[in-house]
Image (tube, rainbow, N blue to C red):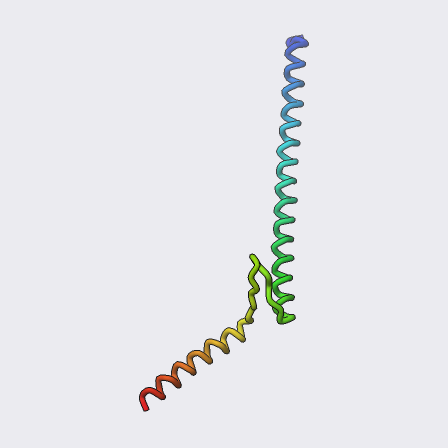
Length: 95
């Protein structure tokens, strides 16, 4: 027997500590994955809520203020109307 009982106990203890550290690292990784999944679910929930409010034509309350949403087509129509009104105003000036 080359190894003494004390050396064997030290090796066994080191192996157990290594297992414990590995399982703790795995638990930390699992917690991070759970957190990330919850965070993504929260983001998706808020995006769905914003979309529902837009579809219903209702404002969104944020920081004690109401915000009305416009879709891309509504926004494009508004831009085109602004351009048209500016063009008409300029043409009226020139007449």
